[in-house]
Amino acid sequence: MSTLSICNLHASIGDKPILRGLTLEIPKGQVHAIMGKNGSGKSTLAKVMAGHPDYTVTSGDVLLDGESILAMEPDQRARLGLFLAFQYPMEIPGVTIANFIRAAVQSRLPQGEELEATDYYADLYSKMDALSIPRAFTSRSVNEGFSGGEKKRCEILQMAMLQPKYAVLDETDSGLDIDALKIVSSGVNALRSPEVGMLVITHYQRLLDYIIPDKVHVMAEGKIVLSGEKDLALKLESEGYDWVTAS
Image (cartoon, rainbow, N blue to C red):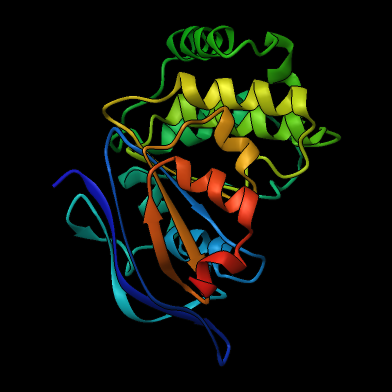
């Protein structure tokens, strides 16, 4: 089955439970959005799916096209087709974007197969042109001295080159002004495809004006408490999250 399935997932950090029976299914070809207050567990969900070592899964499962990934190392999950765009991307001084992405693409090739430099750069520049990213961007160190918008555009470029089956965008609108938000959103929309499922995690409805979701889910106290169509985001914007728990 071509879905990213989160099944009754419970997870904690130390002795503190954060995810409390979260269930969600993201089919390929769809964009789902999760909204919720600070502390509801949204970013924890993204980190647990990616395999962050600070979090312990106490029960439940995460299935990528029917295959459990929880016992896998983070790099195995990535090679299987899971991509995480971080809320706060790390700086990697001394490593250019071109070399960083090249290493990531190389790691996905069969053992003994080498990435052809000419083909790699042709693909890279083609993707950059499609995303309106200046080619000089590739010579900069990963995220070093970047604005919020540049960091997020760098992640979109990584996503375009790696062509994941499922992408989790953790508050990709964080720290963006309106112009940067439009640029980043157009890049995400350019990568929408019947072969890719996306999960967009956000606090605010404004992102969903530009990345139109197929489904919207509300998270509270570590689980999904309400799901609906894209208009649900507008209801949350006008009524607030307390409306969900009160209704």
